[in-house]
Image 1 (cartoon, rainbow over the protein chains, first blue to last red):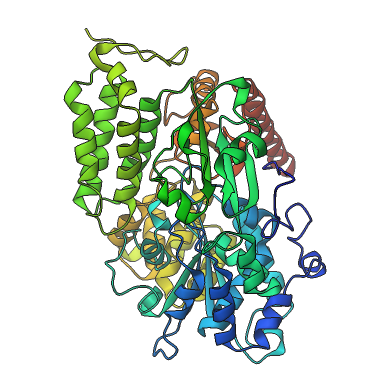
Image 2: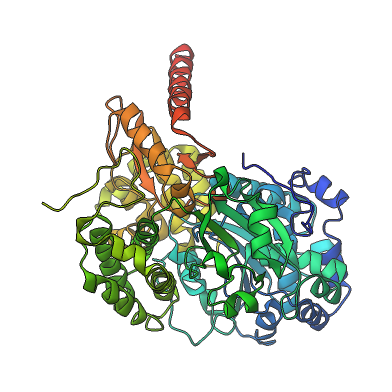
Length: 437
Length: 180
């Protein structure tokens, strides 16, 4: 069972029901659940969208797009049915926040989905969980069944005369499916290959109908935004970055865990205070601030507020909020290799710059880490990665290229130290080191 | 597709319970084909892997060709066309787990089981594979045995995990014989 953590600086909104038995529908109701959706039923869809816009809630999946704006793009009239699609394919290395939401507060996801449906005029929502999350899918399915039993879902939700259905769905192992158009393909029973955009999902999405796709954390936040009011939610964060965020701090810290902190919370403080500093009294070497696809930051670059704009200004991205902390006993070449191996494994193979680029980067880094690199490889890796940027239909190519560029640029010396068959300074015991014959 | 697939014989590919579940599943979505990936995964859970018979039966139930089923199934990393052990051990070695010793855990599993990557133990009880991020980064290093998570692992915890599953298999085998 994943360990729950706590820190006095936390502002618990999305996580306020964690560990309180809210998987049970009666407990969820006791804790104020399904009040927000009732509030929305008494208001107009326009009101809901305005509250969402006012909240400054930006997509928690990684792109950081305003949720209210996204909802407002859905056409009012549509010949085809509209859909809500909740993205619980959580697969970005370093990210495990949705795991806790599904585990502890499944009804908040259901309630948020219904509210999104009311706002855009959809009558059906899908909650898609990655295949590995089977035990969480079972929790979600139980919660959906309970909501049907109470009349919160179905032909006539809360006696309002409005219909809303929810279908849960399992994936079967694919990072790429976390990309919104690939997610729709997967839900339609196909390979998770992205679609060309435009048209955007808000216009032509699932089964060709207008579709709102939101991350599970975004959706779970919606009822809280409605309950407290958009302006009150916005007031918690920094300008243009409303509210709180579930930050998953992992790697070499004393107290890893998922902490809910206000947007804009200082990264240095997050590592040293909230997560208890670097494990074993070691020194900090680098931080990946928002999941493995975000460019690495150096210790002197982490005195920044964790919101989309400030992390962007520091040359990286807030991404999925997965903070991976790396200590000074770690080989960055190995870390880069492990990162790029992942993207090479997950590339769907459609766009050549991504398919070939990730594979070449993996080969170069493998060779490098084994001590067979040559000096040209360093520049070549950077050149290759820079030429992947922006040349693929979905962001996976960028997700592989961006961190690679940062590793090479910021740790060039460490790459050079691997040249000429020199053994890696951080070789782990028991792992055979290749030597130049 | 052979005409045989249309006979009642094909129903025995899945248990009556699963067959019933599939009947409901194809009705559940606005388009039948949306049931494909869940069906493949649930079929694999029961049969152990996507055998030719499973592929044929799923194709028939969805109303697409076997080639289309394979085309989709090969995309997803959890779907397999070969049997695995009764308990499939998936060791995450991605960054967060790696930083906290996932490779040591992975090596310990290899030693204890006497198998390499993608290997199956001689008793057929365990298979072992290295997998990408399983979404347990803050509780690293983490593994999944079939769908069960085990987190905050150390190499020394490996023998205990294995004996736990061995015990489970034994209890199940015993239960079966006493039933008979």
